Image: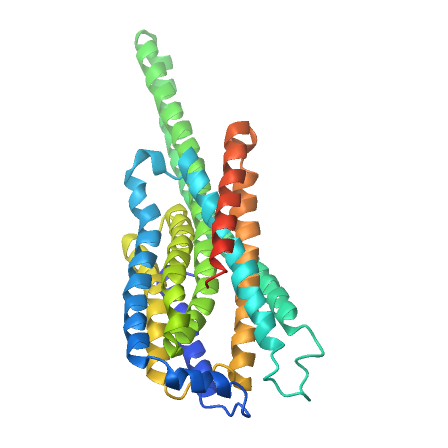
Length: 382
């Protein structure tokens, strides 16, 4: 999946989520949540709107800052992708993403899919749909991850085979030249030393070129792998970012919104750091980097604007809204948990550079736990 195509897919997913959640705003709640609506009518709606505007800019700036730090850090030697500091930062952000899935999103999915506001005769209380959704999200991510990586690997091998064929033709031509030079040397022994050296240079140059080609192929394969990781990770983040934005924008209670502004700003910044690190390792072109960063930064703020637009009719306790948000949250949790454990933490923890250095191994473990701890603490407010 090329970055521009991935951006179109992410945009389509975000638009679909908005279309699915907006009709839920008008769904009949059967009287559930009436107390909250009354409290909202008695609240300071003007203050709530001011806090939503503040949240819009705060989340936008913090998301951009978090996502751009690793990208801009490429110009800082200490933050290069093969440096110790980058390993520590990536472990921290992977811990943040892991805690986001387990502590923030999955419990919310369980809460919504077991709510008292759901119909008593429905299947929602007879089966753990939230856990099932998380499992489907994780398995789906595994399938997409492996299939996409395999496709790009096969495509890359085809290109490599074509390049190798071209190199073989070039090698044959060089071999013919060397053979002619040797024949000339046999005819003129006094010039042999110089000609032998020249033939050796030709062969050595070709061997060096082959070695460089193999190294380049390996780097390209790693970059393709990280491109798949970055795009799938952004997909998981987009799903729950839309829900967060709509919920915040539709809220009418200032006492609920106020702590969310700070908590979600840090939440967005930490997630942005994780995504930015993956984007750096993927070695995207400039336009692709700008597209992915902008899409990440704008998803939650746009969700806030949509929530503000439908706040007069939106009821988050309606059965349709509860089911849609619960299912989407559970799937998003599965995606993020898989990405954090398999594609981010496991890959770096098993890296030979980390395995061979005890201090670095201890450092990334501590960094991961710090990320998990800080993100878990934010669950008190968001």
